[in-house]
Amino acid sequence: IQRAAAYSALGYREWALRDLDKAIRADPKAHAALFRRALLYLEKSQPADAQSDFKAAAALDPANAEYLVQLGLVCLRRNDNASAHQHCKKAVEIAPGMPAAHVALGRASLAAKDLAGARSAFDRAIQLASNDAEARVYRGQLFLEEGQFEDAVADFGKAIEVSPRNAEAYRGRGLARLARGQLDDATSDLREAAGLRPEWRSDLDDSLKAVGRSVVVEPQSSPARNMLKSARAMLQLGKTSGAKTVIGLAVKQDPSLKQEADELLREFGVEP
Image (cartoon, rainbow, N blue to C red; front, side):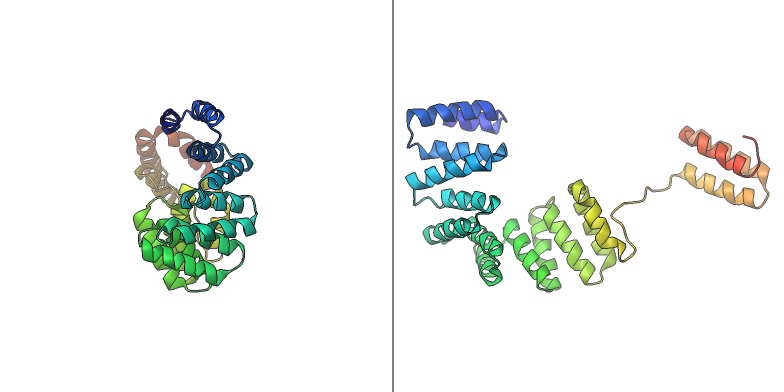
């Protein structure tokens, strides 16, 4: 089991699974091996296998709250909300001082549409561990849904302090700020979220389009490109010679602009 843990830490999942399989064959009641194998199954996107192992581990060590939390979460992942709530509630009963158990119960309550229960669970998790980023994000999402935007901004902000690359927190705070009319701050947050999770870019952009913003950051204009803009203005005034001089300097500074510069000159009837 210890060697499997070392393999897993190094990213050698298959080797870790091989050792855990051997450990479980040697001792089918080795609940620690079953638990570790379940975690690896989750990493390999095999939730059904993970659920089976978590369930077996929890049956062998029914007082282990961590086993019950993970079993509840994998049930939640597989849309078995009733079982998820049952296991997470049991974990809280066994370990009332365990923040992760309360967060898991809150998530199970959310899935069951029990918003009051979810709020109570997240509140308790934060009472136990004020820097729990996961609890802050989930409670922030509740505040957001209930229109308590100031409270949502505060919870998401706290999550970001603890976990600076938390995309969920940036998205939530951005949406809360958007609802409060804080457009610059909202745009900044939603751009950060899109940078961390590119697959969200389209949806986040749609959220900003209604207020004339975008998650797409326009590239900063370079000095050479600014020269081309000046040259265009000179060409519009008929100052061809001066424009050509400026264009020459721009292309010398940034040769990649040569084609664009030639097209600019031709636009005004001037041969490059």
